[in-house]
Length: 106
Image (tube, rainbow, N blue to C red; front, side, top):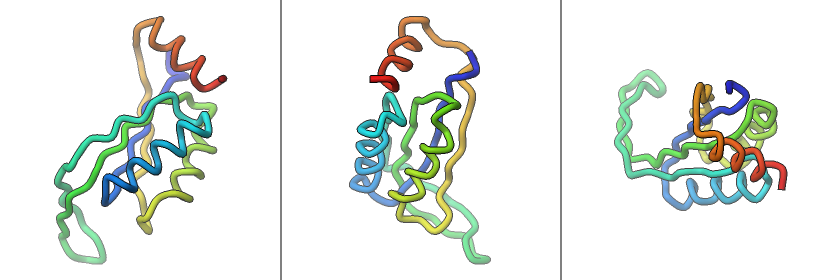
């Protein structure tokens, strides 16, 4: 079942997260995007430790959509270096994965 993936990115506002979510779903690059937040991130940036409230986008898609999805996130994302990581979905209900596939094909 490794053709299905979950991609994550974080952004600085709920408006940016919703814009990414809508753009990816409308473009059939994602079947679903969960927006969660605010969450607190602590990280290195320009040789200093920073902390910020962010919103996490959890994107359900397939590997064959990844390159186009990453390009779309980069176009829509406000960060200079956005987090864009993909994790394999190693198992899932057959009905859910069929819905995911159908949503990407629509």
